[in-house]
Length: 61
Image (cartoon, rainbow, N blue to C red):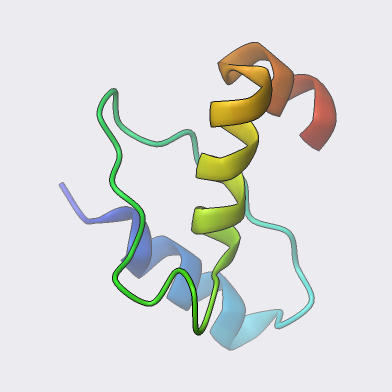
């Protein structure tokens, strides 16, 4: 299985403005650069922490 990071990078290489929504694994950990260079994935983890998984689904469409 490929990591989520690979998918984000692959989509960003072709469509830089695309919003990629990949539900994280059950026990996700933010990247080390969450404070200095936040990613879409880190934003999704923050959203899940605030709203729950269903909240992320509703917010992302």
